[in-house]
Length: 375
Ligand code: 1HN
Image (cartoon, rainbow, N blue to C red; front, side, top):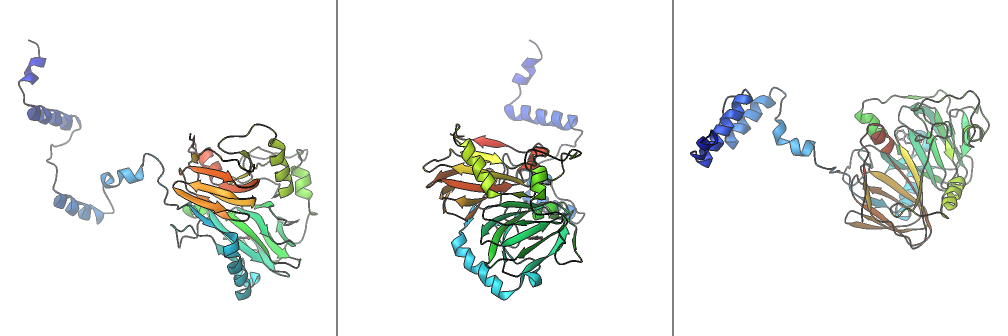
């Protein structure tokens, strides 16, 4: 008989002991008996005093098989929150507040000023005659105009009038101020990459000496120069640079969505487009991806999940959003948040248009982004 016969004389327990000894030898370890819970606890305490902790107690949570977002699905009904936004207008001026905003805090992340782990969202109010003074910061911002007319935002020396559904951006480190020359309160949704920048400890900010920026370019200049499928002769944008187009008028977005609606519909996303920097084809801002979507009346998307938690705003129509196990009814101006890797399906009760934003471009540039289309 050959060598294999020897092991047949061993009991299974002895064979396992041999295996373990062999393993320990190979791993250059001293064989140890499994410790008692008490011995381990005492060990953790001793190493804890040295600023160490055992990986094996946390490994599963550190490297889960799939995202387990602490973000909760949630919806803010504009009709419910509007009166509170208006009440803030009676309690503090835009100038005193610097920015008069009610933050939309994710219900599972209260106290952290964020709507997802990487993004901030808030509703900003500016009353007739008010100015929100000029400042700049390394955090990038988007505005989505939701209520009222007559306000403007100025970015890097150019003003743009804010109209319903317009998507306006403030790139990192550009001076910006807002004002209201009209007769109505104006409310918009702010979306910023504040939690992401905070996580990276990369935030800088400063106030401008002037309350309002002097106009250095006429209104519409950036859109004409960069947003019409043409660019200045000498423009050379680096891939990471934000777009020079800083307003994406809703009228144009709607036109694009209607234009693609004659073609085949995507069963998971309806008619959906992403906003781009026209000079590079990349996201308008490096940290925040933005999307516009049309769902015809009666259309229901098949569920899909993606690794970017996202914030959605209904600009037209309404319907039902099923997020994981939860079902939300949404209408015009309502805002809802979808956590990473929870299936989302949308059903349109009427012809609907939605705007959404997420940290997708960050995940994509890091090679992390995933999507799974279900059904
Ligand atoms: C900001 O600059 C604006 O410019 C809005 O309107 C919200 C939240 C935190 C930090 C800066 C704005 C902001 C913000």
